[in-house]
Length: 207
Image (cartoon, rainbow, N blue to C red; front, side):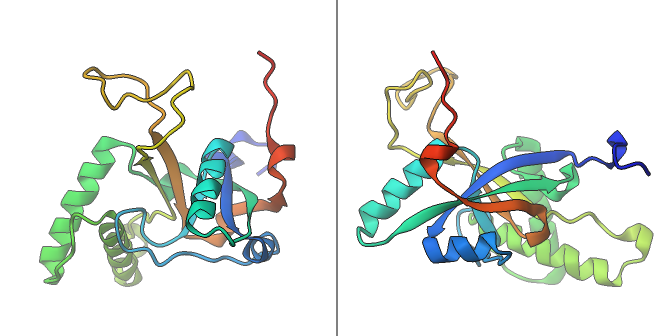
């Protein structure tokens, strides 16, 4: 296959940003992978990323507020993967299917899961599919996600933007309360890694 053949291109290429200590970001840029073992309300296991710089700056402010002496920096990477790698929980149908599947698997294996904890459900489903794929024939193997995408709700935002707060609205509207979060489980999907300077990274729009 020619390298410029469109069928050889990935479905998804997204620049992502990770906020962490200066030391850990340097290790990440050099090839290390430091996933979380999260099992609660968020995306389950994986290394967590934002998809824009405003959310990065929000997270830095939050970390400084809680840990004033902590020095943090920002690393950037390109998420390069296929659509089948991404469990998109901003898609309502996908969210419903994941919940119903988790309930069926829990009954099948006689285990108890906390269905109200996204991370617990996501980790459980991932573990079960990996386990079943080990004993399945090639044509019976199920696709397994390596990236989880969710929208987080954040109450305290800067309300001066064009798309601002809608917490008192009674109608459907655009909102800045939602921030997209990506949890990546496979190191190989994170390419072109580097530590960045926020001021140099920002794109200046003239208007």
